[in-house]
Image (cartoon, rainbow, N blue to C red; front, top):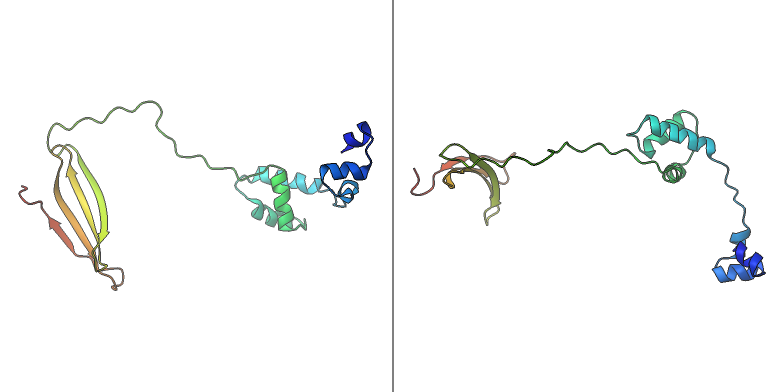
Length: 166
């Protein structure tokens, strides 16, 4: 805007029309009070309490006597680039893992899996599948039927062996 007025000798009105803004916006002086003290205190509190977001920092500032709108504080919080520090994730294994040994005989490795489904009439059931990884056959299944309409669901346990299994 200033470049167009100085270099090209455009009037303020014409330069504003080129940019597409109202001349009032160009001339307007901000009447917003300086928030430097509030910004400084907000940065201090955010540094001390890294897990506090802007809402909890707003409460702390109110207790100290800073009267501020929460939306204004959020604007200042974002302008200062403050965010809640994320907690570190779980530590993962470093390097390559050793491959799992292949089972050489029965009962060396079992795999457990819970499976749930429902019948056509709406009754739900759960199955615990136990698989012996050596022969890859289902040894048994433990079923728990949940009856609808009963408080907490009534459970009936039934052990099932595959047909022809030992």
